[in-house]
Length: 125
Figure 1: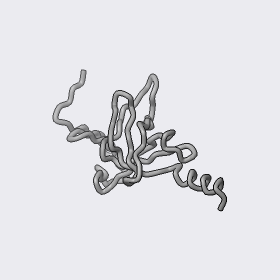
Figure 2: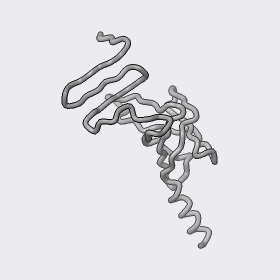
Figure 3: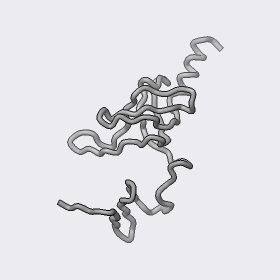
Figure 4: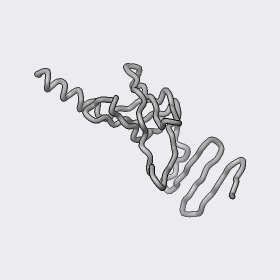
């Protein structure tokens, strides 16, 4: 295989990578990701469902397994596009018909039977 073909193959293999968040800079909306101990990314942005007049803030957590999409396999140009449940961060539910958001002890659950809000304190103002 030629050098150019080998580089192309290496780039294709690195376009989508799994890693673990090792550091977080919430003010800059960036995180660092370790790829199995072999390397650590620079500060990468994470995907937001919305990021303008309507916005959603949901930063990843340190230790969270994430998926990084990198143009041409260059992780310096990567974006964290999502998370994957893992042994260290298990799914908060096991029902196919349930939508659940959980932050610590607080949660919102929506399913066919209704909406449940659970929290130590609920402030409606």
